[in-house]
Length: 222
Image (tube, rainbow, N blue to C red; front, side):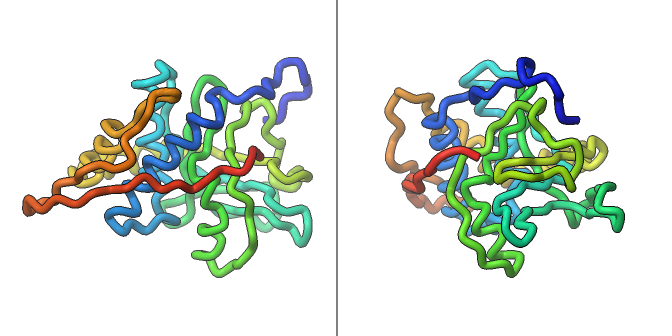
C-alpha cells in the first residue's frame, strides 16, 4: 500500500544507475546471444539479477511474480499492464499467461526489464515510444491501487507467491536456463571494475560462440 508518511519513503536508489545499467546489459546481452524472446523473459531477468545482487552486493534480493502496472504516459491512459484487471478497475490477479516479474530487495522494487518497456509494448501490438529508464523504487511509494496511478513512474504491484514458487520450480528444473543464468553471474563485474567486452559461450555440441556486451544506454529514472 502507499505510505502516507513521506519521511518513511526513500527516494534514493538502492544501487547506483551505473550498476543497474551493467546488470541489465549483461543479462540482456546473454539472452540476445541465444535469440531469446526478450518480452517473455522477465522471470529470467529477475532471477539472474537477484543472484547478482546477492553475490556482489550482499543484498537480500529475490524474484517476485505477479501483476504489475506502470504508468508510462499520462495521455490516453498510458499504463503498461501485466496481469488481469477486474471490471471494477480495482481488483487484480495474475496467472501463468498474464504476469510480470520484478526483484524485491530490502524494501525496494527493482525492475530490470524497464529499459525494454518499449519492446514489451511493441510485442503486445502497441507501438509507443518509451524512454529507456531505470525502475528502482521504495515500495513505500507504491500507489494504493491501479486507478491511483497519476504521474509517469507511478506503479502498483500485486505479488503472487504461489505463482512465484511454481515459476521458480520450473526455472530450476531447466538446466539450460540455470546454466545461462550462471553465465551472466560469471561475466558480471561490479563497477568501477572493468568488465570484458565479450565472453566465450560453449554450446551443447561443443561449438564456441562469443557474446558481446550490448551498449544499450539508460537515459534516466522513472
